Image (tube, rainbow, N blue to C red; front, side, top):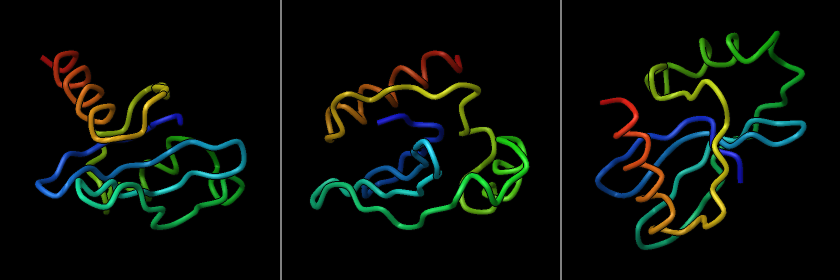
Length: 91
């Protein structure tokens, strides 16, 4: 799973996943796991910057990553570890 955006909430995490043909908005609920909320075909956007500009109404633009990060373990521990790593790199 290639994460391009991650935001932490009390109930879990929300963000975007990069796929070969799509960008996917997801929600990871602490109790119910991963749910795909919306699929956005990459062909609908000029480039990654255009996608970020359009999606920043859902998630702050500064939560988008310059390059995707691979998450091998898409469970609560995996998301928590990734969040801590990203928070440390922001410091």
